[in-house]
Image (cartoon, rainbow, N blue to C red; front, side, top):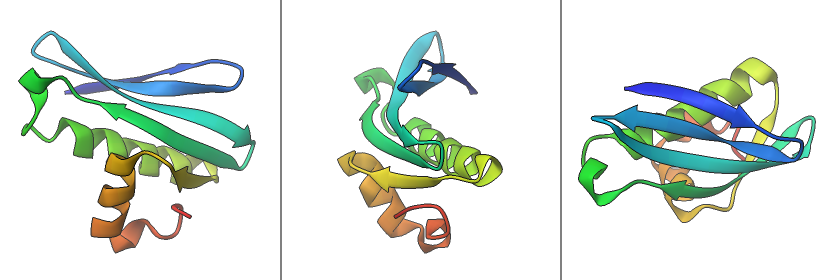
Length: 92
């Protein structure tokens, strides 16, 4: 699975492509040190294949590499963060 990123002036999205289908996790940048994950969209055809988890992990790794924190507004990302206490270093 390939994960890419599209960025704009106030946010962006991580995009996972698998079997010709696209899933996304969108975020808003509140400040240079703070990102708000606000939505995860995984089409039915990709459910159960770990795509959402891969997007969440990618966001955490990007935050660690970039030195910023994440606020989880997206219910899916919030649930993943609760299941992964090792993410507490970047998830508020």
